[in-house]
Length: 381
Ligand code: GDP
Ligand code: MN
Image 1 (tube, rainbow, N blue to C red):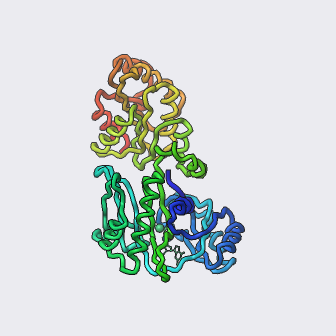
Image 2: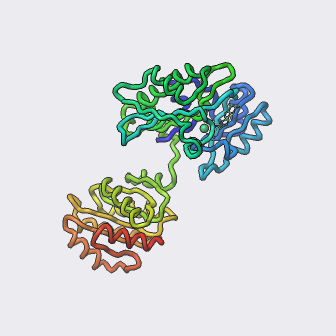
Image 3: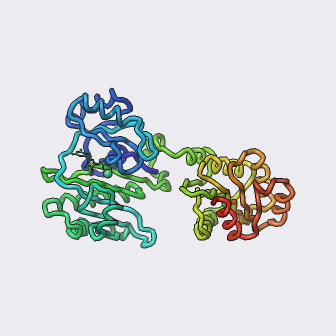
C-alpha cells in the first residue's frame, strides 16, 4: 500500500526522522489557513502517488497568502500523469544547500535489504542510474544483523557525501532503516534528502510503501487504507474480492492459482504479447467468480483479447466450463476469449464449452497453454 507524501512524513516522524511540520488542505481557503500556521515562506505540494510532481508543476513556493491562493488554486484538480490532485500539503519552506538520495528496499534475489544512496538527489534516481550508475552506492544489509551507524557512515563516504554532512546522513540512514524494518515497509525513500545551510540533514520528500502482509500488526494503518487511491480496475477487483494487479498490456489474463497466473504472464510475453493484468481467481472457478473476473477485465479499455488459463486440480473442469458459459451470458464482452482448460474433468469441460453455442468470434479453445497464448496474442494485434 502506497502512502501519500504527507502520510509518509508522519510515518517518518514516528522514527525521529526530521521532517517539516505542515498540514493537509483540500481547498484554497484551507491551504491559506495551513500556510499561516506553518509561517511563510511555504511550499504548496500536490499529494498524488506518483513521482515527478515538481517537474509537472505540482510543487510551488509561496511567500504570502495571495501566492498560496494562486498555487493551491492551480494545483488542486491538476492532473499529474493520470492522478487528479485532491489535496495539497503545505509546509514551511526549507533552505537547501545540497540534495541527496536515500532508499531502502528488499532485494528478493539476494534475500537481503538494499540501501541505495547517492550524493546526486532531487532528480529521478532512474536518471542518475542511466547517466552515471557509479553515483549510486548500493549496500546489501543482512536483516538479521541490521545496519550499524559505522556501516551507514562508510556507505555515505563511498557515496561521496561531503564531510560536513556525513554524521547527519549516517544518523538519518540508521533511522530510516529502523522505519523500514520496524515499520514494515516495502519501500522507504527520501528524495531529496537535504543538507540545510545550517548543517542539518532533513527529509524534504517521503515515498513510503507499506507491506500489506504486515497489516495485522498495524491497526493504525487503517487510516491509510481509507485514503488509498486505486485505479478503477483495481477498485472493482477489490470489491469483487479478486487477486488483481493492473498492468499496461492488451491481453487480459484469468488463471486459477497465483503460480499459474504468473506463468501465464510469462508465456504471453514469450510469444510477443503483453499482459493487461494479473488475475488469480483461486480455487473455486464458479459462475459468480468468473463473471466478476470478466467484468473487471472488461472494464479495461486496453484489453484486446482475454486468455483464460485453467488447470483443474481440486477445481473440476466442468464446473469451470459452466461458470464461463454463465458468465459470458451475463457480461457483454469487448474482446474475444481464448481458453485453455486442462486437468481434472477437462474433457467434460471442453464438451460443455463446445455445446454451449458460443460463437467462435467470442470464445475459442486451445489444447495447450502455449497454443492458447499464441492465439490470444494474435487476436490482440
Ligand atoms: P517530486 O518532484 O514529486 O519528487 O517532489 P519533491 O518533494 O521531491 O520536490 C521536488 C523539488 O522541489 C525538490 O527537489 C526541491 O528542489 C523543490 N522543493 C521542495 N520542497 C522545497 C522547499 O521546502 N524549499 C525549496 N527551496 N525547494 C523545495
Ligand atoms: Mn522527490
